[in-house]
Length: 327
Image 1 (tube, rainbow, N blue to C red):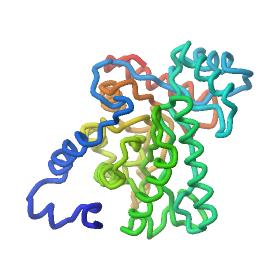
Image 2 (cartoon, helix red, strand yellow):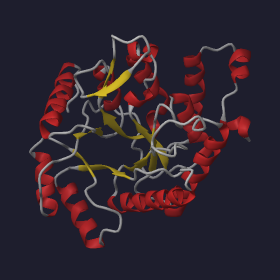
Image 3 (tube, helix red, strand yellow):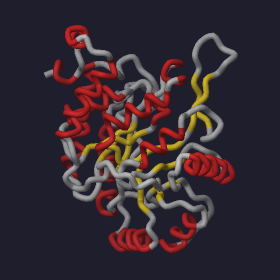
């Protein structure tokens, strides 16, 4: 069974295929087998628009003020403001207000470590993901999102030598199935975001997980910056983004927006996350590819101030204008 999950390097040699040719060949087949029956969020569509969203600052009382805080920033997508365990009336009020004003609830965050070496912490993380997915399904949010986790004792999302082993791959499959099967969502899905040092860390490993987990309610939360891990990827990130969408498009439920830069005064490659517009991520390609999907939101993250989000949104919209994608 392990050979099914991890691509065999000998197969590459035997088939004499280049990496991207292999991905496209396998990806088309897997994509055809894993179309989400609950909704077709990832089906191709030339809509020439992308919903942008981000955190909102400042207090608000009630769903209507929450909606207005997004509209005044030009956001048509939003992070879920509720916590798991919210009352039915509160959930319905938020869903109604968002729907009335065409605000799409992009994601419920369940940030935690379901594969923690601390078994108690791991169990709590799995329960958090189950509760988050239940809330996402109640709201009709695009997804509940988390990372797969880490074996790092000190940093829940940090690197560890065991993170990319077969044993951990199998554990990720098991925990993800457990989360999805506990909820059996009908209006949402559970999605994993890539990390450079944990599954999934590439287009190929996303494909492996999609096949191994084998649940229609499991999807992709795409963050291209997290998948740029070398100077080669950095300088060719436009092609890398095209590859991501060509292979993973039908499974993409939500995306994160940020940027990346490569330090030039260092002899060891050092890649840093940075505000959108200050790095070299090919946003033209990113937005064009994203606009082909069916209403998949783009969510800004990891900035400290309202001003930074305003500047990031301004940049993303300016690129959208150049490539004829309405943001």
